[in-house]
Length: 231
Image (cartoon, rainbow, N blue to C red; front, side, top):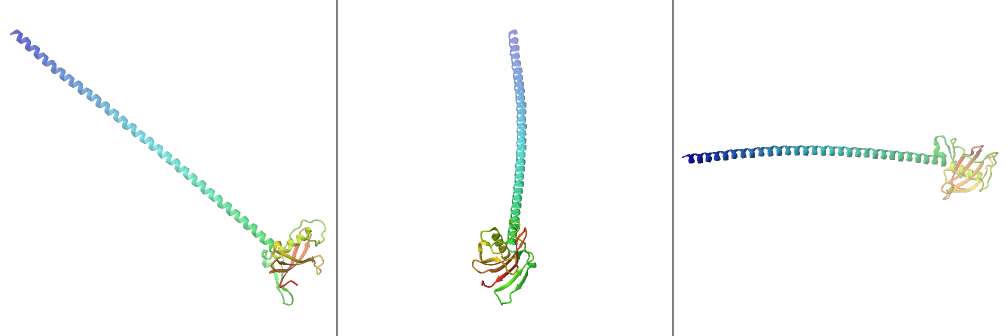
Protein backbone atom coordinates (compact mmCIF):
# COMPACT_ATOMS: atom_id res chain seq x y z
CA UNK A 1 0.00 0.00 0.00
CA UNK A 2 2.83 2.26 0.85
CA UNK A 3 4.65 1.52 -2.40
CA UNK A 4 1.56 2.28 -4.44
CA UNK A 5 1.18 5.63 -2.72
CA UNK A 6 4.78 6.58 -3.36
CA UNK A 7 4.50 5.53 -6.97
CA UNK A 8 1.36 7.64 -7.40
CA UNK A 9 3.02 10.66 -5.79
CA UNK A 10 6.02 10.45 -8.09
CA UNK A 11 3.83 10.09 -11.11
CA UNK A 12 1.77 13.14 -10.12
CA UNK A 13 4.89 15.14 -9.43
CA UNK A 14 6.36 14.31 -12.81
CA UNK A 15 3.14 15.21 -14.56
CA UNK A 16 2.98 18.46 -12.72
CA UNK A 17 6.61 19.20 -13.52
CA UNK A 18 6.05 18.46 -17.21
CA UNK A 19 3.06 20.75 -17.21
CA UNK A 20 5.07 23.52 -15.54
CA UNK A 21 7.92 23.08 -18.03
CA UNK A 22 5.45 23.19 -20.91
CA UNK A 23 3.98 26.44 -19.61
CA UNK A 24 7.42 27.96 -19.09
CA UNK A 25 8.57 26.91 -22.54
CA UNK A 26 5.41 28.36 -24.03
CA UNK A 27 5.98 31.63 -22.20
CA UNK A 28 9.59 31.71 -23.37
CA UNK A 29 8.47 31.16 -26.96
CA UNK A 30 5.85 33.91 -26.61
CA UNK A 31 8.40 36.32 -25.09
CA UNK A 32 10.92 35.56 -27.87
CA UNK A 33 8.18 36.04 -30.47
CA UNK A 34 7.30 39.42 -28.94
CA UNK A 35 10.96 40.41 -28.88
CA UNK A 36 11.38 39.52 -32.58
CA UNK A 37 8.15 41.32 -33.46
CA UNK A 38 9.17 44.49 -31.63
CA UNK A 39 12.68 44.38 -33.16
CA UNK A 40 11.26 43.81 -36.66
CA UNK A 41 8.80 46.67 -36.22
CA UNK A 42 11.56 49.02 -35.11
CA UNK A 43 13.76 47.91 -38.02
CA UNK A 44 11.00 48.49 -40.56
CA UNK A 45 10.21 51.89 -39.05
CA UNK A 46 13.89 52.85 -39.31
CA UNK A 47 14.02 51.76 -42.96
CA UNK A 48 10.88 53.75 -43.78
CA UNK A 49 12.30 56.87 -42.15
CA UNK A 50 15.64 56.43 -43.90
CA UNK A 51 13.89 55.88 -47.22
CA UNK A 52 11.71 58.94 -46.64
CA UNK A 53 14.73 61.05 -45.71
CA UNK A 54 16.57 59.80 -48.80
CA UNK A 55 13.61 60.67 -51.02
CA UNK A 56 13.39 64.14 -49.46
CA UNK A 57 17.11 64.64 -49.97
CA UNK A 58 16.88 63.56 -53.61
CA UNK A 59 13.84 65.79 -54.17
CA UNK A 60 15.63 68.79 -52.65
CA UNK A 61 18.72 68.10 -54.76
CA UNK A 62 16.61 67.81 -57.91
CA UNK A 63 14.79 71.07 -57.15
CA UNK A 64 18.12 72.82 -56.53
CA UNK A 65 19.52 71.44 -59.78
CA UNK A 66 16.42 72.52 -61.70
CA UNK A 67 16.66 76.03 -60.22
CA UNK A 68 20.33 76.27 -61.16
CA UNK A 69 19.56 75.06 -64.69
CA UNK A 70 16.74 77.59 -64.99
CA UNK A 71 18.94 80.40 -63.69
CA UNK A 72 21.68 79.38 -66.13
CA UNK A 73 19.18 79.32 -69.00
CA UNK A 74 17.80 82.72 -67.97
CA UNK A 75 21.31 84.20 -67.77
CA UNK A 76 22.19 82.70 -71.16
CA UNK A 77 18.98 84.09 -72.68
CA UNK A 78 19.74 87.55 -71.22
CA UNK A 79 23.31 87.44 -72.55
CA UNK A 80 22.09 86.36 -76.00
CA UNK A 81 19.49 89.13 -75.96
CA UNK A 82 22.10 91.72 -74.96
CA UNK A 83 24.48 90.37 -77.60
CA UNK A 84 21.80 90.59 -80.28
CA UNK A 85 20.87 94.09 -79.12
CA UNK A 86 24.53 95.19 -79.23
CA UNK A 87 24.88 93.61 -82.66
CA UNK A 88 21.78 95.40 -83.91
CA UNK A 89 23.07 98.67 -82.45
CA UNK A 90 26.45 98.13 -84.07
CA UNK A 91 24.83 97.33 -87.43
CA UNK A 92 22.55 100.35 -87.08
CA UNK A 93 25.46 102.64 -86.15
CA UNK A 94 27.49 101.23 -89.02
CA UNK A 95 24.61 101.74 -91.45
CA UNK A 96 24.10 105.31 -90.24
CA UNK A 97 27.82 105.97 -90.59
CA UNK A 98 27.89 104.50 -94.10
CA UNK A 99 24.81 106.49 -95.09
CA UNK A 100 26.39 109.64 -93.70
CA UNK A 101 29.58 108.95 -95.64
CA UNK A 102 27.58 108.30 -98.82
CA UNK A 103 25.65 111.52 -98.34
CA UNK A 104 28.85 113.49 -97.82
CA UNK A 105 30.34 111.88 -100.92
CA UNK A 106 27.26 112.73 -102.96
CA UNK A 107 27.30 116.30 -101.69
CA UNK A 108 30.96 116.67 -102.58
CA UNK A 109 30.45 115.28 -106.08
CA UNK A 110 27.26 117.18 -106.88
CA UNK A 111 26.87 120.66 -105.38
CA UNK A 112 23.46 121.05 -107.01
CA UNK A 113 22.19 118.33 -104.65
CA UNK A 114 23.88 120.08 -101.73
CA UNK A 115 21.38 122.95 -101.77
CA UNK A 116 19.12 123.10 -104.81
CA UNK A 117 17.09 125.86 -103.23
CA UNK A 118 19.98 128.31 -103.69
CA UNK A 119 20.73 127.36 -107.30
CA UNK A 120 19.85 129.89 -109.95
CA UNK A 121 18.99 128.16 -113.23
CA UNK A 122 18.62 130.09 -116.46
CA UNK A 123 17.26 128.30 -119.49
CA UNK A 124 19.05 128.82 -122.80
CA UNK A 125 17.48 131.02 -125.44
CA UNK A 126 18.16 128.57 -128.25
CA UNK A 127 20.63 130.85 -129.99
CA UNK A 128 23.65 128.86 -128.79
CA UNK A 129 24.60 125.36 -127.67
CA UNK A 130 23.88 126.28 -124.04
CA UNK A 131 20.84 124.34 -122.82
CA UNK A 132 20.81 126.01 -119.42
CA UNK A 133 23.09 127.88 -117.02
CA UNK A 134 23.47 126.97 -113.33
CA UNK A 135 24.89 129.29 -110.66
CA UNK A 136 24.81 128.15 -107.04
CA UNK A 137 25.96 130.35 -104.13
CA UNK A 138 26.25 127.16 -102.01
CA UNK A 139 29.27 125.97 -103.99
CA UNK A 140 32.47 126.06 -101.96
CA UNK A 141 36.20 125.87 -102.71
CA UNK A 142 37.37 122.27 -102.99
CA UNK A 143 40.50 122.77 -100.88
CA UNK A 144 44.17 122.86 -101.81
CA UNK A 145 47.57 121.59 -100.74
CA UNK A 146 49.26 124.59 -102.38
CA UNK A 147 50.72 127.39 -100.28
CA UNK A 148 52.07 130.84 -101.01
CA UNK A 149 51.20 133.08 -103.93
CA UNK A 150 49.14 131.26 -106.52
CA UNK A 151 49.30 131.36 -110.30
CA UNK A 152 47.23 128.97 -112.47
CA UNK A 153 49.24 126.12 -113.98
CA UNK A 154 47.67 124.46 -117.03
CA UNK A 155 49.89 121.39 -117.08
CA UNK A 156 48.16 118.03 -116.86
CA UNK A 157 50.93 116.71 -114.58
CA UNK A 158 50.65 119.59 -112.08
CA UNK A 159 48.89 119.68 -108.70
CA UNK A 160 46.96 122.76 -109.81
CA UNK A 161 45.53 120.89 -112.82
CA UNK A 162 44.41 118.01 -110.61
CA UNK A 163 42.71 120.38 -108.18
CA UNK A 164 40.92 122.07 -111.10
CA UNK A 165 39.61 118.64 -112.22
CA UNK A 166 38.37 118.03 -108.67
CA UNK A 167 36.46 121.32 -108.73
CA UNK A 168 34.98 120.50 -112.17
CA UNK A 169 33.84 117.07 -110.91
CA UNK A 170 32.39 118.77 -107.83
CA UNK A 171 30.37 121.21 -109.95
CA UNK A 172 29.10 118.77 -112.60
CA UNK A 173 28.78 115.53 -110.67
CA UNK A 174 30.92 113.71 -113.24
CA UNK A 175 33.44 111.24 -111.90
CA UNK A 176 36.97 112.09 -112.99
CA UNK A 177 37.31 108.55 -114.38
CA UNK A 178 34.25 109.22 -116.56
CA UNK A 179 35.35 112.65 -117.74
CA UNK A 180 36.84 113.76 -121.04
CA UNK A 181 38.49 117.22 -120.93
CA UNK A 182 38.17 119.08 -124.24
CA UNK A 183 39.54 122.33 -122.95
CA UNK A 184 41.01 123.65 -119.68
CA UNK A 185 42.63 127.05 -119.64
CA UNK A 186 42.44 130.67 -118.59
CA UNK A 187 39.05 132.36 -118.71
CA UNK A 188 39.77 135.39 -120.84
CA UNK A 189 36.54 137.07 -119.77
CA UNK A 190 37.37 137.09 -116.04
CA UNK A 191 41.14 137.51 -115.89
CA UNK A 192 42.35 135.08 -113.21
CA UNK A 193 39.50 132.62 -113.61
CA UNK A 194 39.56 129.25 -115.38
CA UNK A 195 37.29 127.97 -118.14
CA UNK A 196 36.84 124.33 -119.17
CA UNK A 197 34.75 122.19 -121.48
CA UNK A 198 34.18 118.60 -120.39
CA UNK A 199 31.85 115.70 -121.14
CA UNK A 200 31.08 112.20 -119.94
CA UNK A 201 32.84 109.50 -121.93
CA UNK A 202 29.59 108.56 -123.67
CA UNK A 203 28.99 112.29 -124.40
CA UNK A 204 25.53 112.18 -122.88
CA UNK A 205 26.51 114.98 -120.45
CA UNK A 206 28.40 118.04 -121.68
CA UNK A 207 29.38 121.15 -119.73
CA UNK A 208 31.26 124.43 -119.70
CA UNK A 209 32.60 125.01 -116.19
CA UNK A 210 33.88 128.32 -114.81
CA UNK A 211 36.20 128.36 -111.76
CA UNK A 212 37.80 131.02 -109.59
CA UNK A 213 40.72 130.76 -107.18
CA UNK A 214 40.18 131.44 -103.46
CA UNK A 215 43.46 132.01 -101.59
CA UNK A 216 44.19 129.24 -99.12
CA UNK A 217 40.99 127.36 -100.05
CA UNK A 218 41.45 126.27 -103.64
CA UNK A 219 39.32 126.37 -106.77
CA UNK A 220 35.63 127.22 -106.48
CA UNK A 221 32.99 126.70 -109.23
CA UNK A 222 31.14 129.89 -110.17
CA UNK A 223 29.03 128.80 -113.13
CA UNK A 224 28.13 125.67 -115.07
CA UNK A 225 26.64 125.66 -118.56
CA UNK A 226 24.89 122.49 -119.68
CA UNK A 227 25.44 122.03 -123.39
CA UNK A 228 23.48 120.46 -126.19
CA UNK A 229 26.67 119.81 -128.16
CA UNK A 230 30.39 120.55 -128.00
CA UNK A 231 31.49 123.07 -130.60
